[in-house]
Length: 580
Image 1: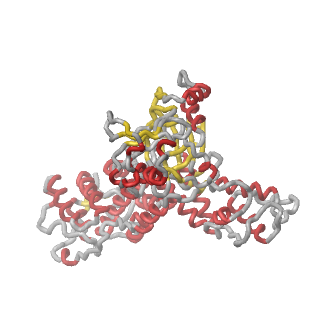
Image 2 (image 1 turned 90 degrees about the vertical axis):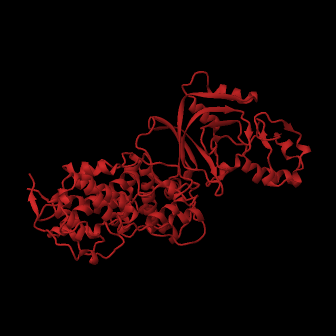
Image 3 (image 1 turned 45 degrees about the vertical axis):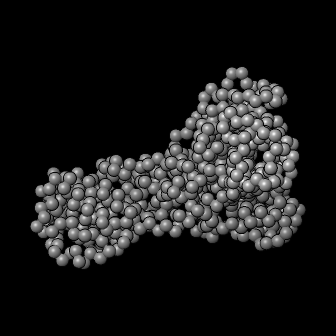
């Protein structure tokens, strides 16, 4: 039968384990068990928390009250040894790597050493360490290891917080720790697909990864060389080319045949490259990325998936900035998709969510001050007729009733950017910077989706050219898809409204959620894994945080000496009483 330590015995054991940074919680004369719960918590917290790191201080304060409420009954050990539940929890922590997490974050080394513990002090220490590690693991698993807004000022993502107090209380009652922990994993199918690919890639890495292809000129259909044989082996290993079937006709390994062309196109499609079937510099570079780098990408994007809510709307728009692509999802299916242009490296589009509430046909463009100063004013200085030629009105100031000015009356040549107080607004028309359709999702960043008169940017694979807003390649198609089922609007009517040249606002019957994300790895519905370049360096920022921020989450990461505090302590190692 499970045992429980006396209040005084357990607290003293938690306090006095050799080499830990506990201060003495009580002296031999202190009747800790006789105090009120508030007095116990206060003493336990004051003495322990003064020695802890910021990472674990709050968790230990929570555990203080948890153990006091349990009258110091341990969760994972009895008076002789760790229980089977303790060993099950250790296994769960050790296999956290399957979720792209790091077991070393959960005090694994010390916990393993303590699993052979038999002394009261070591068993008490093990119990507390297991509780602390489980709380941290559940938090990491359920909402991520990092705080997105602290990681990157352009990430406006707010993961669901895990209630650690509820979690540890529920864990203490759980029959199976493995099943209990599973309830904290994200339920998104995208997360589980990534997990599966991560396991496959790690298995592949253990057997040598994939071969590289020697540098050289572009490879094309019809060529024959040893480099083509290397390409064939690489595509087979990566799953883009089927392995030869036993008994089938022999294959010329060094010939770049039509089958190999199609395999190269499949690889290029999965990596956001032009799918021309040629192996030029960009495709060769992607082919030669080490499998270890792809594994890290998978781990980073598992972290991003933990930030995202499990419950998604039945109908919403998803823009993946790293993929330069927009999808309208309706009941889990892609109802419409189109390429997009996103913000440049200097005007990065933020990651955030908002609701689209209306569309504007033939919109005006009120130029943001920053763009007027940085982009428009230099053009006017170079060409005084620029504003008139491009349909801009100039207002005296930014007040609602401001009057207009004759553009020729302003001394643009001597106007400094910081002194530009005029409001510039471009009239509707084909030359308008927003094109002829604007999709409004009110937000603090003044980011929206819109058409553009500049169509050449869509021919590029890496499309980061805008001032922050998202330019849509097929705005009429998007408007038609959004307005499906909304009375009074068909594609013909949308086109008629555009042709009228008049500004028209179309309010949506129901707000349409828009999610703007940044995912550089994902798995599609056919279980093909996709990778994209880190256009905004957000992978690098996240990797640096996860890899370099060594979080010593053990109880006493500072390693303070306890020798001076142990002189007056007499361990009560025999004070256990049987649980009733």
